[in-house]
Image: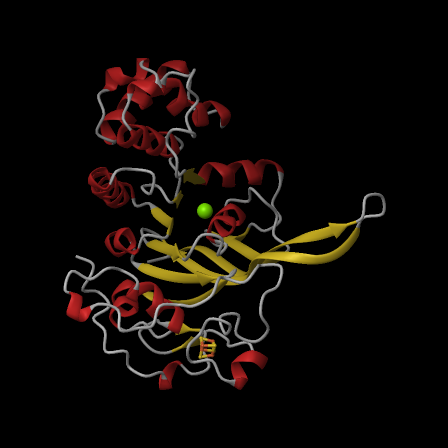
Length: 336
Ligand code: SF4
Ligand code: MG
């Protein structure tokens, strides 16, 4: 597999200012605080973590919708951190997004056909007739009838609207689709259909997905690799199988242990996490997870743990991951 996306030390810090006239910078919100990962062609990398951990901001940085405070982005072998003008427009075509909320992401006054064709218009692709033909093709690709092009978003269910959102993203033939919680606003019964559609489209079109999610059941179905984020940084990353079978970071273990297991005897023997996620304005020193980690020691408060490779592509940012007690849990049992 060839590398499509490479992210290195990406950060987004928002200055916090005080004072009405002479605004003085008094601190920073470290929304994304130095993340590195890669995505190969045809692959799905899931970014998971609780809300506010920086996964959506990471997605917006990758899409170049916001400017990074630090770090580099490489796309298809080129450094695209600072591209502008026509190179930027080409990049925008090659990276598309599917939003969480299919209700909010479609203009209610636009027909579905016009909504799907809009990115092609923006990027100057085709003419009116070829775009109409492409819309019909896209509608059947996502499992809708071509005549639906004349209808309006309110005439569709949530799942159908998300199919429309996917067709719209695919209209300009992107290489990368960033999926920001694409099924979390849908009924559980509909989620599987949309996830299966996305997997099927990935195979057919060779798409790469950066898949943002907090629902590990969906991630288990969708991802090839997973990166677990906490407070703006990656705590653990690796192939899905390894991460679910042998999670090596206390935070990953806590996330997995929180999934309800059908067999009560095998349910969470990992102590649930105490306390709240600290503010991204006051990221704890050393290991940023130490205020909630049941295994924290003196070193954790002083020294930032680097992501270390522990075999099978699994990387863990914990000083003590090799010596953590085996929690004796079936981490995957709650997920089928
Ligand atoms: Fe816990 Fe220390 Fe590991 Fe951080 S480095 S996860 S505080 S044991
Ligand atoms: Mg979000």
